[in-house]
Image: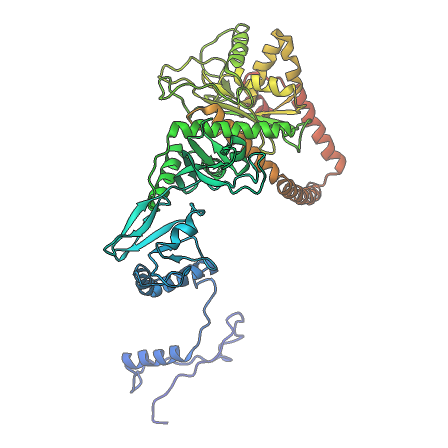
Length: 575
């Protein structure tokens, strides 16, 4: 040893006291400082070496997780940014007009590119071959390859070459693509008929309006003429706007508009028409679509479809899953959709009068009958501490410059729209009572659901005591529920009826999926509740008879409770 005495530390058990001071001699503590003390930098370097030699696995809780979808989006964004310069160059290169030969005659230079003639067609044509190919394909979108640019041209134009070799555009007549009959007279089917342009018309498709002519066929022997009739037009999915066939609509225009309105009820008809006109303008065609004509013809088309389904005994406002014995009917109103008194346009009568939205005269007569039997009181309805504003016994007609104030609609528990009516005095009890009365005649419903059923039902019982024809309505059971309705302005009855029929049609098509999901969910929920009941019985140490007795007591209390009793909530809390 160098003379530096190091203290000897012994391991002591602090829980055990020493028997005597002689057995554990005390060691004298020294406070001598060693000669060589490591510096702070040396300690830090040693610590760095230790930390560098250790490998600590990352904790899954501390490491932020990135979902697979987020990773795909990040990779897609990176790939797009990397490919953006090349995409831009290729897009600009696609606009360069290159010299090509006609793919029809193989000799002349092509001056027209057709965007719809894809292989094995002929997308590049010369001035001589273009009218031959597209004389029958009037709906193809073409572009002229002159002046160094691709310029869209309408079907009524074709490229010509003048004496100086310069290219220009010339007008031509396009015929509506309807094949003529094989025989138009008794001169024989082997006659060489000549098809000539007939009456001019405007054809509106999903790609916009086209200026075409109806084909006309004349027999060279007897001079008998033929032109397509309304039946011929309907056979090829053309709907005439008038009997003179000055405007014709393709079926796909109406079906597309109907589906777009169903997906987005707030979609404006004017916006849809502007979209059609823009598609026409972008392909070189010009033309305007009259909004009033489109609206009138669409209503007639939808009404004709309804009559066709009616002949097939299709009932659009009946639920196939719960008719005729419905478990529940839900009624609710929406006052946020107005129709102003001084609205633009004429007040045309509804084609679907009374089909879905009840006739206003019939509803008004029922409301007047109810109002004549009741005692008018002021103030709002109160249930316990709650004050209702959604519905009341009376309501004054709005002083604003509006006509209808909203809708009241009844649905079944599968979401099928059953019937509706117009609001004229806000949400009064007479409106749901009218729907309940109308539906009670065709559906044997058990429950009547409403968001203020606790206040509506005493009112119904009071009216049923004065009007015996309302007595069957009290056999239903009230139930609280909420249902929101959708509506749209502008010939509301027809448009809402059309959308309601399409809504119900879509619901019926998916009804098997909905019922299957509900069955699986109900089965799983029933098993879960059985397990919960067993756990509760073990926890409370009760038997099955005790739970059945509790259920019986609750049913008895609900049956003896008066619906019109005041402060029913406070009484229940005291009990």
